[in-house]
Amino acid sequence: MAASTTARDIRIVGFEPRWREAFAALNIEWLEHWFMVEDYDRVVLGDPERYLLADGGHILFAIDGQGRALGTVALRREGDGVYELTKMAVSPEARGRGVGRLLMDAVLDVYRTLDARELYLESSDVLGPALALYASVGFHHHPAPRAGSHYARADVHMIWEP
Image 1 (cartoon, rainbow, N blue to C red):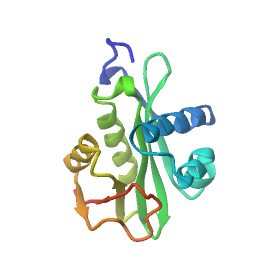
Image 2 (image 1 turned 60 degrees about the vertical axis):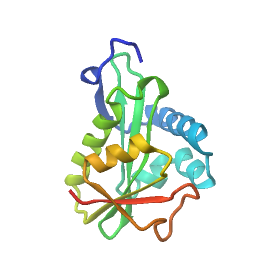
Image 3 (image 1 turned 180 degrees about the horizontal axis):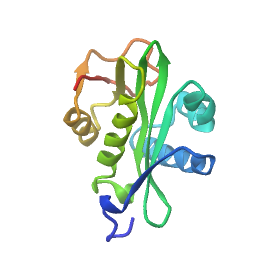
Image 4 (image 1 turned 30 degrees about the vertical axis):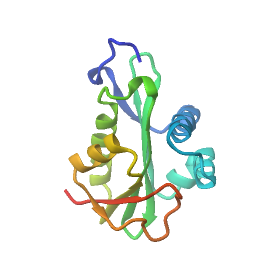
């Protein structure tokens, strides 16, 4: 991300097949940096159309002025009005520049348009800045791990309660 790029220069777009590789690459970089890529991650990242979009989920991207994907976030429809906020990742060069906040605001705007009753996320207590972002928009801690969690790394369970 060029030093002159600011949050104002970024647009949020929905998933298109041309962003499939960026979705996987952003998430794999983030996972390898902080944890490890789990089998469930590989399945979802390898076919987001099937595992996220086909059941009514959404994937968003933060795109800079040069057309590069700087970050991504997804909503996975679990069923019965329950959605998971998942696969949020920002490229290393864009971290700390407001990209995560833009993605969070956009994904919450999408969630508000859905016929939904619960939005949750799973995370890790080693991700202080991410947890602060989640709390700042109305996510609250609940007992962890969440029953049926897909992630070995998850020791934080939060529900959006604005």
